[in-house]
Structure formats: structure tokens, C-alpha cells
Image (tube, rainbow, N blue to C red; front, side, top):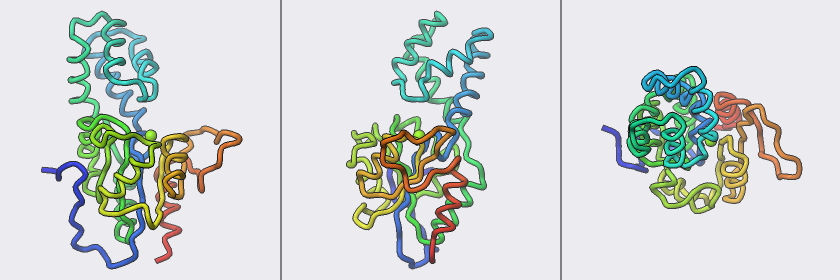
Length: 236
Ligand SMILES: [Mg+2]
């Protein structure tokens, strides 16, 4: 049984070191949401016998996860003239989608090493509480975190500073001593974290940082590289 939302987990073997805060975005940062969604879309297409082009349509219509799910499933229902109501489709998605999400053990091991080095680690994510908590649980991430903050539960979204404050608080920490944020969203993660006084690592996903925008402190290709950077720059 996992702890309640935002619970600060016990860490009996934690070394008494200076504790810095490391916040992590979830989708397309720690977990490859695109790959997980593709697995869900393939399953959904098979289940409903949707035909050859359905998977590509489901992926495109998803809008990289930014489209509200009620609107997405209204479009899905209409596009494929499914007998199930959009609410039912969404409900089924909430049950199945998290089970298609994975986090490599090597990344979980990196998180464990950072915590053992004195870092306080939290997830900050914009999304639905039920879905995101199920992803944290299914991927095993929940055991490696000091806390987590989900926008639906908190009533506030990144890039709002209040969400970063809440995430820090959920980890038993605060933004007063600074810390780091790792994420793939230019606006929500990097600009938001900068506004909250955090240093930033951007997961570029083969994109170029926009000209004219203050850059992140560091840019990397994926989460493994980001966590390796943190481990390499942990001075104690
Ligand atoms: Mg993201």
C-alpha cells in the first residue's frame, strides 16, 4: 500500500548531510510518456478494431498530453463512432494508460544514489491526480521520492511559483535554499523553476532552445544524462 498523496516518506538510513532539493517533472522527463502512450494507443486500437490509421490519429490528437482528457475522448468517440461515452473511454484509459508507463531501473538507481548523497527528491507534475499517482506507483518511482505534487490535487499548475512551493513543501523542504529542477517543458519546467529561484536542467528532446529566452543552466538529451550531471556535481 503506497503512502497518501504528497506524503513525506521515512528515510531511516539517510545520511546527515546538507539537503538540497531536486524537483523532477514526470511526463517525458522521468518517464517516456510518448512511448507509453503509443503502447496504450496500439492496445486501444486493437481492442476497438479501429483500423490501420487509428494509432497515428490517436497519437496526433493527444497533443503531447496537453489536450484536456475530456476533450480528447470526446474527439476519439466522435472520430471512431464508438458506442461507449467519452467518460467511459476516459475511465478505461485511466485504468490502462499507467500500466504502459515504465522507468528504467538504471534511472531509479541514479535517484537512489542522489538521495543517499543527501538530495531531497520530489516530482512536480501538471496532470490528473488519479492518473499521475498510478504512474508513480506502476513505475516504482514512488519508493524513490520524498514527495510529489500534482496540479489537479493542488489546484495550481506549473509554471506558477505556488506549485513549486507546494512541491517543496510536500517533500518536507522549501524553496528558501534554492535547489534544482529537471524537466522537458520550456515554459512550465524551466521558466517556471527559474521564477521560483531554482537552477534548471532542460531535457531537450531534440529541440533547440528558443532564441531570446534566458537559457537553462544545463541542457541534456534525457533523464539519465541529467541525473548523471547531478551526481557528478554533488560535491559531498
Ligand atoms: Mg514534461
